[in-house]
Image (cartoon, rainbow, N blue to C red):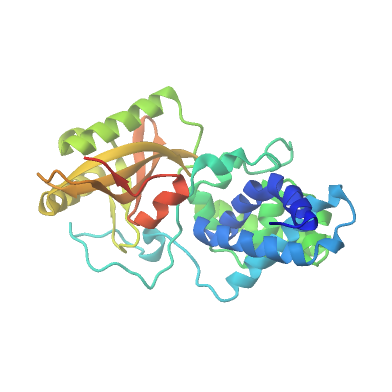
Length: 328
């Protein structure tokens, strides 16, 4: 049973857990890593709770502990990325090689992170909306920043902190934070221009997702391809290959899906501020359970699917509150 002091600390921490988890996800590019760091921050905070001088200081103090835990992890961790940034050119052949397990990939996160009540969403001075701040394009662009630039950008442009507040957290000066921000903004603006920033899905977007699911489950590749933009991009971490263009993506799927001989069931979800689907699969013609296969995150532009990022990792499903197996 928790002591009174421990229970009091947890009560102070819990209102900030989701927003701090979102902050750590942006820092690290992985919700699994973020949740581990939040647990580490909770332990560090419990050990140092005597440093809290007022309830008003709790939020900044917790963010400092969590940010420093992220910075410590990033000293020993390779940078996360996505296939189209790891390989400069799209794949020409409609086939896959071995998964690139040695590469750390950016991972998806559920839109539950958007419900972070104490984040900077209502601050008029934030430069990046809460929804965009968990978008794949933005989170991936962050991974190319040096860790301290990354932290400064998130504190000021996402959470709405002032440079002086950020400087205090990072144990530096406001002048130094301004310098970090200038370089970080330039880099992120250049990289996220390559992606589609998520917007709140409209009813038309949700109808598009339903058609996506229907055509994927039915195996109607012609109808599926009609949902794609001319310049659609398909990436599939941990596979290093990526494909660009409607005709190329159609040709790749037409070559690989019949060989897999699987039936699919899809569940609509919301991930990284936009549309997504959880994909389950089973062998064709078998009355077996459907097993977790992939989380597909979509980006929409002009009523068509502009990007598909397929995360083929069943271990991600519990992070979305999803079962790893569905009944026949």
